[in-house]
Image (cartoon, rainbow, N blue to C red):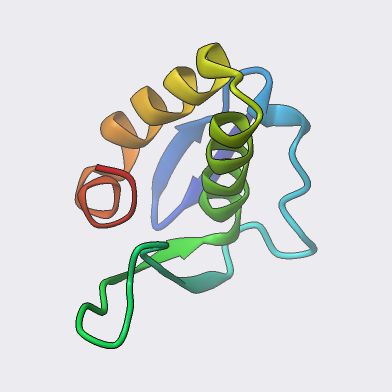
Amino acid sequence: MNIIHNNTSYAIPKPFDQCYFGADPTKMMTIYNRFSDETFQASAKLPAFAVAIYDTIIGAERSEDYKTMQKGLLWFQKNFIDEYYVLLD
């Protein structure tokens, strides 16, 4: 599966191609670093399809599915490197 966003084609690998990307997969959304608090606020803007993959990574981590988590982290490092460092590093 491929998604075109800002004239770039993003390959969505399995199992992330099964994620629900919403009615508009390219809609921009702001995601806050999950470790943000009143003294530290970090956020990144991502298209909805990347948010779905981000959510899957977090879910995989919590359920100890490290294979899926690692696959998602590598995808983010390749496709959204700046956002990876804000949200996942």
